[in-house]
Image 1 (cartoon, helix red, strand yellow):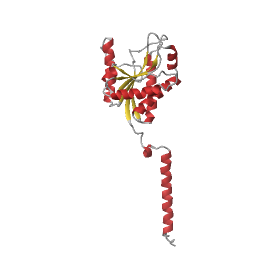
Image 2 (tube, rainbow, N blue to C red):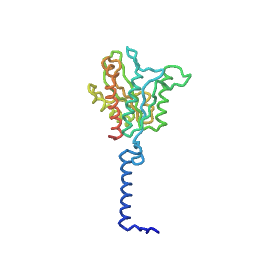
Image 3 (cartoon, helix red, strand yellow):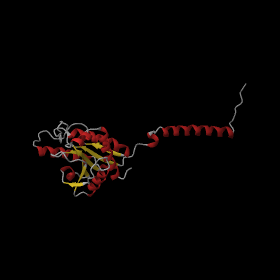
Image 4 (tube, rainbow, N blue to C red):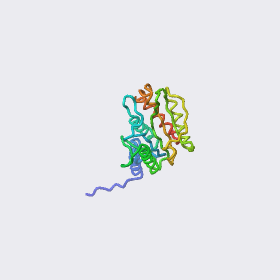
Length: 238
């Protein structure tokens, strides 16, 4: 005996449509709240900067009485700044991520070696089409009395000056920091870089009290946050 064929009515069809739509909505919301790239997409890159950890390799930079090299702290600071800028939508390229230099084999003499090393870093930023180049350093004086951060720009660069000022304005907010202003300088890197470039001297490694702070992670975090905030302000980012 044949069983009767039931033809769905309008009410049954309507219920089926509602069920399908409910399931689809649930799937969409699930994907959305999980932060799926399929819905949200990747973080938009709003700017690209090159962070240069000053010195490296054959060039230690300033050296403390305890035998600590400036280049080591510079590299740690560069990595910290990079971590902070990424979430703001700023792509960061480091000139070095280890203790190396970029002097070609066969180059001799202090000045030729230094110039060759800096030329490589400038070329890296240029080839990356970076919007800014920020070189991190530590300062030193024979007396050991000076303290505080300083930011330098090439005197003929208006954008370099603006970048230096936005960074320095944040650095002087660090507790205990001297209230210095951004200054013009004739340093090779900022003079020859084709994009806005600054040298940030984060403190004086020659001052015993400041050097003790510069080695502390909590103080490095404060300095890195100040530099990152200054860079974000330069690009008009929160």
